[in-house]
Amino acid sequence: MANIQIDELREKLDEINLQLLDLINERAEVAKEIGRVKKAQGINRFDPVRERKMLDKLTEKNGGPFDNSTLQHIFKEIFKASLELQEDDHRKALLVSRKRQPDNTVIDIRGEKVGDGGQVLISGPCAVESYEQVAEVAKAVKKQGFKMLRGGAFKPRTSPYDFQGLGEEGLKILKQVADEYDLAVVSEIVNPADIETAVKYVDVIQIGARNMQNFELLKAAGSVDKPVLLKRGLSATIQEFINAAEYIVSNGNTQVMLCERGIRTYEKATRNTLDITAVPILKQETHLPVLVDVTHSTGRKDLLFPAAKAGLAIGADGIMVEVHPDPAVALSDAAQQLDIPQYEQFVEDLKASGLFNPAKVTPSTI
Ligand code: PEP
Ligand code: MN
Image (cartoon, rainbow, N blue to C red; front, side, top):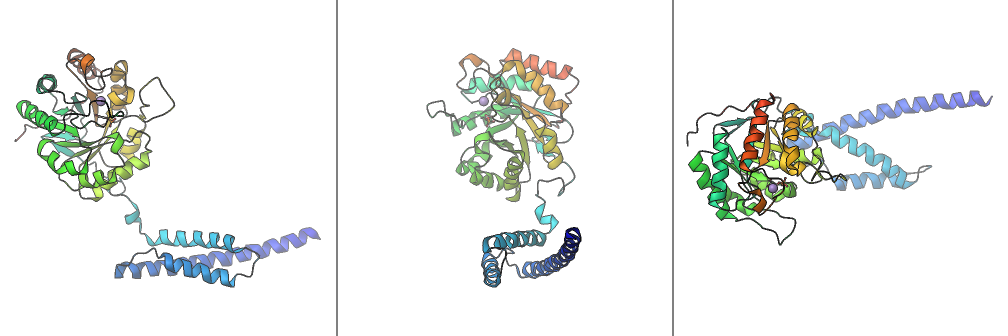
C-alpha cells in the first residue's frame, strides 16, 4: 500500500518537474528577449535593482515550506543562468582565445617572426649593468645568429636593498648596443607611466611575473603599438594568465606573447616549478605565441638545457635564457646565468638536439 502511495507521489513530482522545466525555459526565452531589447538600447544587462525587486516580491508571496533565504538562493541561480544566456557566445569568448581566432598570432620583431612555426631564442643578462657588459653578450647573441637581446633596466627585486636596475639609463644602453649589433631589445617595464618612454628604446615590452596582475600596467601596455612579452605570475593559474593577456589585447594591442616561467610550489629543488604542460594548454586555449623561460623557472644552470629541450619538444615558440659575461659578479641572478662559453655550448646543444627549428629572420629595414 505504502509503495503505491510513493509511486503516485513520484508521478506527481515528475509531472511538476516537467511543468517547472517548461516554465523555466519559457522564463529564459523572455529573459533572452529582454537581453536583445537592452542590447539594442545599449543598456547594461545586469540590473541589481530589478533583481532585488523580484526577490522582494517572491519573499512577500512566499507561503512556505521553503524559507525566504532558500527561496532567494534558488531564484538567484535562475537569474544568474538567465543573465549568462543573455550574453551571446561571441562575447563570452575572449579575444585571445582560439575560439575567437583560430589562426596563430604571428609577431614580427625587427624581421624575426614569433609564432610562425619556427622558434626564437631570447638571450641576455638578467640586469643591464654597463655598456661593456651588454655589448659582450650582444656580440655572442649576434654570433649565434639570434635576434633578440634581453636585459632588465627596471628590476623588481624581492628585497628593496638589492640592485634595482639602471632605469632609463639602462634602456639607453640596451638601445645603443642593439642598434650596433642590429638586434631587438626585450626589457621589463614596471610602471605604467614608463610605457610611453620605453617604446622609444625597446622592441618588446616585458611585463614580469610580479606584475602579471598589475592591471594599470597591462592597460598601458595595451594602448601602445609595441609587442609585449607577458610572464606568468608567481602563483597565477593558467586562466588568470590568459585573462591578464586579455587586458592587453582588449585595450587594443594584439601583439602579445606569453611566457611560462615557473610557478611557486612546495618543491625546493628548483627555484620555481616549470609548468611544462601550460605550454600546450596555452597554445590550445589561445592563439598567442608561447615561450619558456628556462632561467627563472629552474634557477639552476644544470637544468637549462633539459628544460629548453622540454619546452621545444612540447611546442613552445621560443626559449628565454640569461647570459652574463661574468655571472659570478652579476648584480642579480648570479647563480643561474650562463657565461659566454656556456651559452655557446647551450646553443650548440640545442641545435644538435634536433628539436630546434630557428625562426626565420628577414634583414632588418631599420
Ligand atoms: C626577468 O625576466 O628579468 C624576470 C625578473 O623574470 P620574472 O618576472 O619571470 O621573475
Ligand atoms: Mn633574472
